[in-house]
Amino acid sequence: MARRITDVFRSTLRRVVIGPQSKARKTTPITHEILINREGRIGARIFEKNEGIKVLDFHVEGPQNRDWYFHYITNSDHRVTHHYTVLEDRVIKAVTDPRMNPTNQNSVRFTDIGSEELGNFIQATKLYHDRVLREVYNRDPKTGLALS
Image (cartoon, rainbow, N blue to C red; front, side):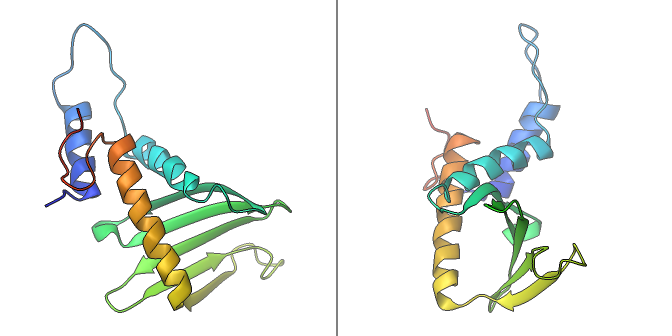
């Protein structure tokens, strides 16, 4: 059974930050923030072909991979965040977009995502997992084993 990204993250973090370090070369500890940034950049590439927006990142955080974040900037320089929370029976999307209420920069709109968006979300998360396991953690997405 493939290992979860959070398990791979913990073992990688433990090995890099806590584990023995070679005296022949100095290594820079990889922090949670650095890994999230790498994962976010890889996630952003999933949406490269979307016209009208510049995708900043797409990544997962939180326990049990429940919280997904999608950050982008529109052509008119508006910064928008979609926060998806995966529940047992649905996915809730919280959109933060200053255009919804210009007087309140922290305006948030909550909605359940519909079937088409849910399909797109599932496809994006699968691509994300595969690419992150390969490119960040050097693991085969199907087996969880280290790539040679």
